[in-house]
Length: 265
Image (tube, rainbow, N blue to C red; front, side, top):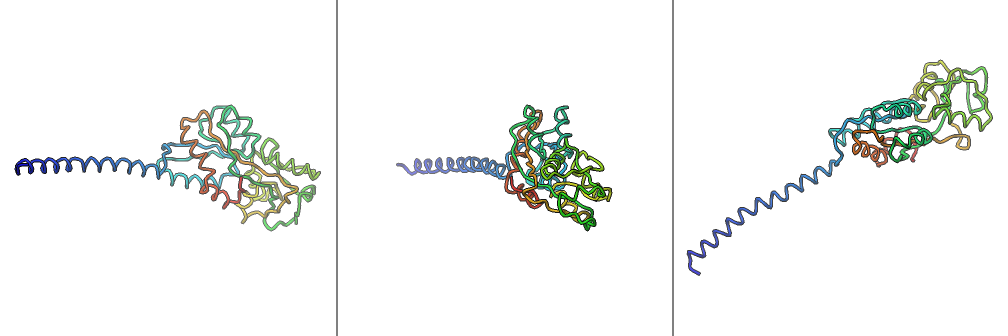
């Protein structure tokens, strides 16, 4: 091959290589971006509203902050109330994306409004007394003392149903001074000294351990509360809502729940 032709061939190969190298680099760059996005999660950013049982007030504030940190662009707003109130809100078409109740019974009544529920945690009852337990309350039977001011949740509320169940099983008759709309209202009555004792969830008593004492109820006499979580079919952020509900069962979320005293589902 003549020298001139050889030089032309080498030059052509060099020019081809110069063009291909940038193209190859571009081809590698896009998957790299995709991998980075995948590492951060593919959940679409959204403003989520989650209706949650009042007994989740403290732990969900922590969980929400953790979720937002791991999912930039997503904001989670919680609306806390008794499960029966939350159910009423769903039936009335309140704008929300997900629901977490303190019992399966309430969630089951909303089957046509929700996705498939997942149990994310369990809880149990304790007797909350005023600080120092001045009335020396040791067990459920002590609550029958007519000299005591005992407050319970209304029977329409999950914790109220659980309370009625455990008291009935032990044949303990209690005349509450009031029946409250949610467990936090029961706890507040005891904290403020407006009641001597009340039945609340273990996690609620733990959240106020500097203001109330908790008397353990034996397993054989206790009731276990299940916490189901589900998306709402009316959500305008269905994918983001489903991602949040799924996240509640991840090790990261479960650790937050365990640290707050909730039991493993």
